[in-house]
Image 1 (cartoon, one colour):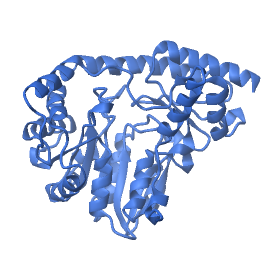
Image 2 (tube, rainbow, N blue to C red):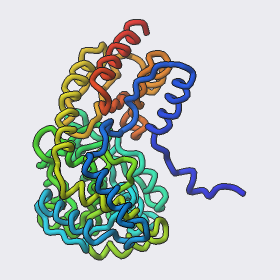
Image 3 (cartoon, rainbow, N blue to C red):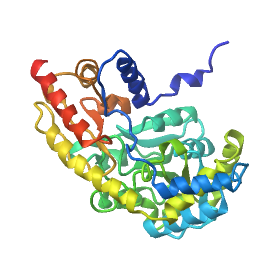
Image 4 (tube, one colour):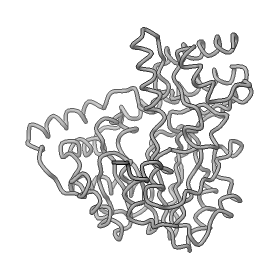
Length: 387
């Protein structure tokens, strides 16, 4: 037997591949500072953990509704309505195990052979992967460092065609930490409002913001009915292992997403969903403290990167990633990432793990202790001095 041809187009996340290499080096006794994985290094808030324990004791261990528990969907609808300035109800919400199904399911439901999808590059690699699986054509739009890693609007406009069926936006963005300026969001909405397409707005980092809250395209006139908001609990509440995400979408798409959900996962774990209610409706102090700490680390770490010879790093406005331009080192970014891991003991990602336009950049996750971040900077400095 041979694998189906579609498997040739399925990508993997570079962060997990580098993590495997880093763990292997650690097993050999080498000290590694992990700045490759995009995961908060904080514990899940205590009241969320307690809510899950209570749910287990109360018997929330059985199948639940495919679309998600009504109580959680109501909490999500309230939260999205309040934070995005739109009117969303539980009927618009699909609860899924993690954020990725809200990339995968809508693409499978909406895209046919020959359809085109505009998406950011460098960007989360699963966008391109799932576009291929759905049989559509990926149309990457380069993110421009001089624009704070937002789209070049002229390139975006020229990339639109009669075959464009979906536009993927991600703000705050992985891997750059950039936020699409509100004026750019408005311009994008004006370009696509009257077109027969859907926007997938990946807002998973929406609470990890260090300045002005990014504008959701769903909040603009005529856009809610053609926008899918992707959000979840992994980043905001340090719940990566809980696998709890959701999409807020037009009701005409909900049934299709539910069909794919029931065929693949049946439902999201009930006790996890009970914890999600506690996360959204309970105290926010731990989540807010995490953001404050990420901001402190960002300021110190990015400042340190900009003092390294050959490095130039824009100050990220959200998420927990730094994306320095390393062309000044004279070392190709892929080679530099490999050498930093093997010779300096600093695990990071080459920018091309996020697409061809990431060449010349590295991605560091500063979701690590201040002590480790400072040690990583010192190791990189010593490596560059001897390279």
